[in-house]
Image 1: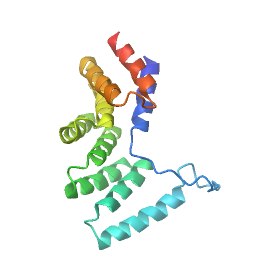
Image 2: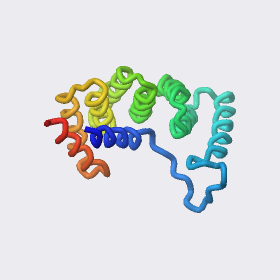
Image 3: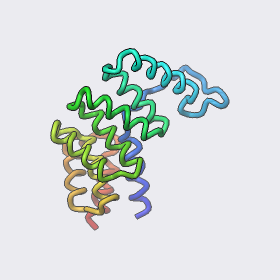
Image 4: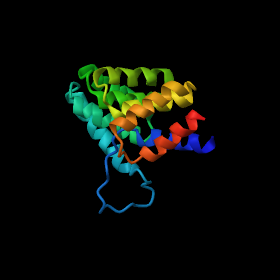
Length: 175
């Protein structure tokens, strides 16, 4: 059971927002940390300034949300994603990222709502199915519905990097 929980947590982390890849040639400096904290602080400041000038810039709200999520500032990420969704409510990727933030904030019920809203807009959004499956399995203990979500995920993304883990999880849930 511990392996199942660890696998689920790894999946949720991987299912988080689309993390920006740091250029490979950049060295890590002492005190910078793995996420490049000083660089993120500078980027956050630049994005916040841009939003003061143009608060209707969806892409900038999304970028701010992504950085906040990457630095585990889930409340601030959720706020940024919420602002993006107020401008573009059909953005399924942002809605899924918002759900992931909400779950990380200890609000699985709200996370599940966001995943379901995403699926109303795009019933074939693989990550929404996977993330909803995780919430159903581990937060709501609803194995049957979780299995259905994971099966849908696997049907949509049979070659996903985590397909083996999801299959293992489904096998464990069926026991």
